[in-house]
Length: 270
Image (cartoon, rainbow, N blue to C red; front, side):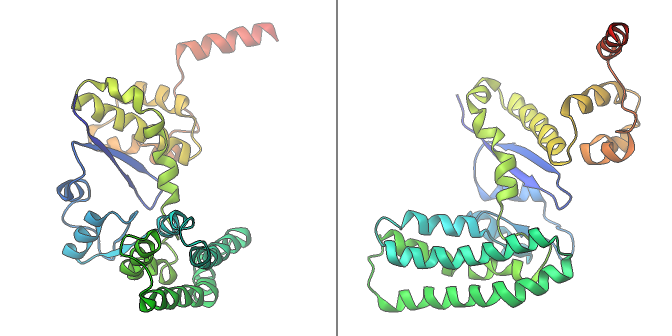
């Protein structure tokens, strides 16, 4: 049996795609994302180093994830509880600002202003604190706290992108939640048998998860699309992806014969 990887890619319009590749090498990032990204593109990732190399090579902005940064300090809490807690409290302050933004349902301009006013000073103090801890030279290179500090300092530029761009989230939790269906079902994916089967799993999960992101009933969507696709122009197949389908066809979806029978039974019973 061969091992492979599902690489999740999530677009700015809440569309997700699970791409199957045989490994985690940097070449697969290029295959997945291409060599010609859109102008002013921002790549938001979980901190895996191959993404940084890709972004640097193509000269695109690379935003990184505060949730993954926080996780490093959580791992250090057993060894250095006081200093790790200082870091975690600072990061909690950043998340408090994001919570306020959600609760007030702010527009992009006001959201950015609030981040600049409240979150940016917190981030600046946090990174000064990180530098100060390194200056103390009191930790072994193998210390979990040293690793957490190094993780944060090396990714400072990426971690602060969201402070200057209202379209960028503080973390990658949205895609982490969407990705959960893959590890939850991995015992099933063991029985794909072939790489082709794994590709098909990725396609189906991409459609199902995107349906959920757009509050579409996956069953209703698939019943409609599986009937519609044979007559739909191949040049316009993108209209059958969940986001576009919701705009064009969700009001009058095609139904199955079973649906008609059930409705007739219900009417007779009523």
